[in-house]
Structures are given as structure tokens and as C-alpha cells.
Length: 245
Image (tube, rainbow, N blue to C red; front, side, top):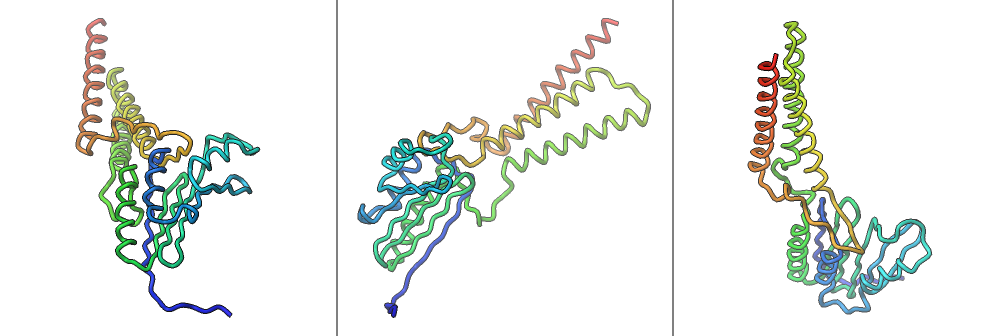
């Protein structure tokens, strides 16, 4: 028969998306998560196919996987987890995969739970993480998507206008429409790629792209400036072609 001891537990769960986690970020997060908990109560693990690998530290776990007879690239990980338990006093798990990072804290001391949660939140936000439940403003990627759609609609209307009026567009006009559409698509692709979640357990996460550090206004200005340069170049080319006729 199981007996239940009376008491209370404070629990905190957090989920972050778009985290760019490399070896250094994971080491810092795991060190903070397990701080104050005995080393023999900490387990770090990963699942590869049907096998789960476990060890006390991330370094030892990486070495264990590197030496194991497993299929595929042993430097590519899809998940890693830390679990640290100290009786009913403290319990923490940190799970990271290719989509998100999740933290679960539980303990009898509410101050410890909320303090650890705040420290881990800062680390995950520093790694590019965005709280999944947080209501946020439009991200730069969404603004780029709207710009791309708007440019596509504008170009479509322009070409439709030429068809309806039976006018033959100049080469410079067509070049301008195509170039602006291509450039806006490249900017959208690059921005979305730089904002995807990363999990590099055996190496450092690559530096973020320079355009990710720009504000929304700076990104919009950059797109407008590039479009203006392309339009001007196309206009000069068209004028030169007309002059040579």
C-alpha cells in the first residue's frame, strides 16, 4: 500500500521555440538547471532510433554516442534531455529538440522554482528562444511574407494591365518587376532560414545572420533600398536601349 505525504509543490513549465542551441548554450543551461542538486542525481540523455543513451555530463554523453555502434551521422542530434531530481525538494527537466526547448520545474520551495525559471528563461531568450505562449507583435519574418505577397500582387496587376491594354512593356519595366520579386523572395527565404531552431550538441551554433540583428524598420528600409537600386538600374538600361535604336 502506497502512502502519500502531505505537502505542497510549486510547478513551472515553459516552452520556447526558435532556440539556437549549440554546445556552449546547452552547457550553460544544464549547469544552471542542475545547480545545487547532487551530481549523482543528474542524468543527461538522448534518444537515437530505439536506443536511449544516458550519462552524468553532456561531455560524457557525447563521447558515449561517438563510440557507440549506431547508424547515421553521430554528430547530428535530434534531441537531448537533462533530468535532475532531489527527492520532493527539487525536480527539473530540460528537453530540447529540433523544434523547441521545454523546461519543467517543481519543488517545495517556491522561491527556488521561480528563481530558476527566471534564470533559465534569460538563457533561452539569449539563444533566440521565443516563449510559445507569449502573445507577440508581428515578427520580421511575417512582415517579409506580407511584403513578398504584396509585391507579387502588384507585379501581377502590372502585367495584367499590359495584357488588357494590349501594350508591350519595355524590357526595363519587365526586368524591374522580376528583379524586385526575386530580391524580396531571397530576403524572405534568408530571414526565415536564420530564424529556424537549431540543435548542435557536438559543436557551437553558427553565428546568426547579420540581417537577423536588424530591426523591422531597418529590414523594411533595406528591402526598399534594394528595390530602388534595381528599379533605377533597369530604368537606365531601358533608356540606353531606347537611345541606341
